[in-house]
Amino acid sequence: MEWAYDGVSWVLLRWHDLWSNVFDGNQALATDWAWVLAIVGVVITLRVILFPLFVKQIQSQRAMQKLAPEIKALQERYKGDRETLQKEMMELYRKEKANPLMGCLPILIQMPVFLALFHVLRRPDPDQTMHHTLYGWTESNWDTYVDAKLFGAPFWSTFLTPADQLAKVDASALDVKLVAGVLGAAMILTTFLTTRQMILKTGWNEDPNQRMIQKVMLYGIPVIMIFSAGAFPIGVVIYWTVNNLFSLAQQQFVLHKYPPPAQNNANAKPPKPGSKAHEKMLEEQREAEQRRKELAPKPGQKPKQSGQTPKAKPESGVNGASVNGANAAKGGPGAGKNLSRAERIARAKKVSGAQQTSKKKKG
Image 1 (cartoon, rainbow, N blue to C red):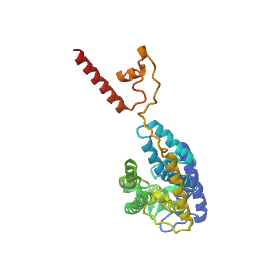
Image 2 (image 1 turned 45 degrees about the vertical axis):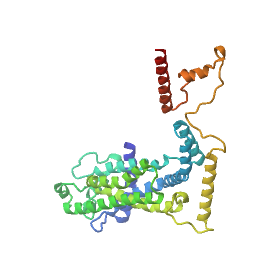
Image 3 (image 1 turned 30 degrees about the horizontal axis):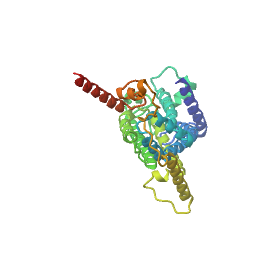
Image 4 (image 1 turned 90 degrees about the vertical axis):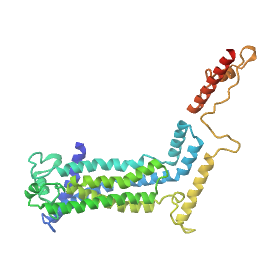
């Protein structure tokens, strides 16, 4: 993680250098706005880098939603044949340029940034006497951050910071708890609203397992944050809250530009006839109907099943007896090929019962 610490520190310090020249060490409302805006600058930098990936994530989600009827048709067509189903689904994803894993990529990139910022911003405090110049920091950067405050609360402090440590920088424990409490509540609320906005725009997943994951993301994470927010430095809470606000605005813009497919959004009002949205809806419906026709079995064609085996020509044995037929009746070699587990068990019971009946007759 050293590369992440160095990268996040470099971006943070460059933004701080910029705003330090603007404010020239002046404060307002007991707040060092140069450090506040430097943290906001980290959010802006990250959002600019991730914006193309976020757009691709939404496009991939829309493609997956459009393919939902086709995927359901494939699941019914290849029921019991998991291997063929996976191949057909991957071919469908490739053809329609849909990537189920694309939705995780922006989150995976943001996590190292958050962890790096958490590590970097919790280091400075009055009791720390070593390693002031790690990750590109200078002694001046260290001292200004230790003394920097947001409405009287030091950036490095948390809701649980003891009063004697805060007294070293002339800070009040009451101020810290008030600022940390309000910021923590804003962080939890914006996290909930960001997830809720995405779910309401894209719709609840029909798959029970995926729906459960959505509920955990919507309600579980905010509940966990209630108990963990007290350990976050105020500088990190500023980053998380501002990042959530940017996410809300960004999602609103992208989701408006890439709305959910009409066939998957039952609550949406139908677009006006003749409008671009109406033409797009008709085009999506035609594409979906064409794909369903391609996946549907042809007239007279039997549906594919994993338990069916191609009929082999009988081989003549002694006195013209069919060898394959005998092997099938006796459960011999080749009798259980390409059968499902349930069919093999049923055949084994049938053969076992026939053997026991023949023994009783002989006895």
